[in-house]
Length: 399
Ligand SMILES: Cc1cc2nc3c(=O)[nH]c(=O)nc-3n(C[C@H](O)[C@H](O)[C@H](O)COP(=O)(O)OP(=O)(O)OC[C@H]3O[C@@H](n4cnc5c(N)ncnc54)[C@H](O)[C@@H]3O)c2cc1C
Image 1 (tube, rainbow, N blue to C red):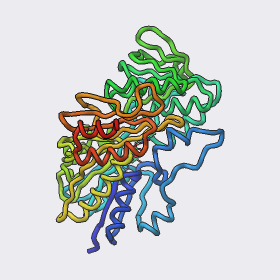
Image 2: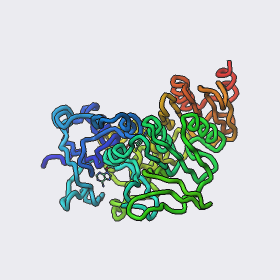
Image 3: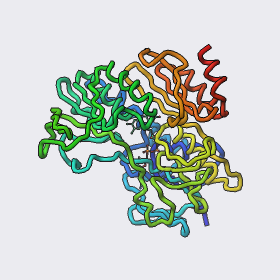
């Protein structure tokens, strides 16, 4: 009987990179790529950035054409229906009621935007995770409207900047005392908050949303202190939840993600995971983590594909998290982990248009935040991976 081959569930960044890695390593067997969305695999970062610009809708940021997927990668593309079940003993995935057999499986179902409870279906209220969300938001981003973003994470910050580029008044409401604290830590969150304000964004921290006012269509956001913020458009950016619902009966260990070991194996023969859906043991830091960033998803996909297809030669997935975010012309980059014991500026300062700050744990550098410091941050990514010491690095960078 023919080998059932490699099956990849989730036709986005991690799924596609897994397929590409499999072909690059010389795998010639069948490959099936299953995607819940009807769209060809596309890139998400542009959706909160340039895709929101200009009066005409840009082309979707597809990675490849259907032709290229079929002929260059030899993919059996199954789009428009989600996988609904996994039987890791019988080695099948169910799609549209029918089982699909696999020899090796990569789970790359990513994450879904977390909605604001009680607001689903209210006109004018959106989350931003996929192409359809971005289309709906950009069609309403017309000059003169008032937009409120709930949640000051990176995506919320980018949408607010995009709104300002389109002459839309943008207010960002954040429950925590500072924006982006989870991503960059409590010390530097306020610094990025000031950067955001310099882009004309009205940032309100410590503001709890009590309710959205307006019945069928949103009219305002009411905060717990009674403040009412008029809103024609509300974008909810309060994080994402890993897409694991379909795996609850599979026997896989789920804990805010698919739990994997350092090789990205999900605990069953042939089953690996990559991208935003995976919580894995990252040997670079000796701890389990789930990340939501582009670079890690692509790196994990290559490791997962290799290990799924070559289980006799497993590779660990050791990586230093890296995230970038574009706020108009400003590039914000973060590498490593934000929970340091000390943070120090080594280039520029909190009010500069360009700065670099390091995070210390023990005698090591564990993270770095840069504003308009593209190359320095990338160099620090490798340095952190090598476990560089704090004193030497601070001294060298301060020159
Ligand atoms: C708007 C936006 C902007 C971003 N900007 C940046 C940035 O500037 N920098 C950065 O580093 N990162 C950024 N990211 C994060 C980055 O895009 C993600 O980390 C990356 O997309 C993760 O890839 P993934 O393939 O793991 O998951 P996803 O991209 O979420 O893809 C998962 C796919 O699986 C599909 N799926 C889910 N369940 C099933 C199922 N049961 N069956 C079949 N298919 C299923 C989904 O429909 C989806 O297409 C951004 C994310 C978003 C949403």
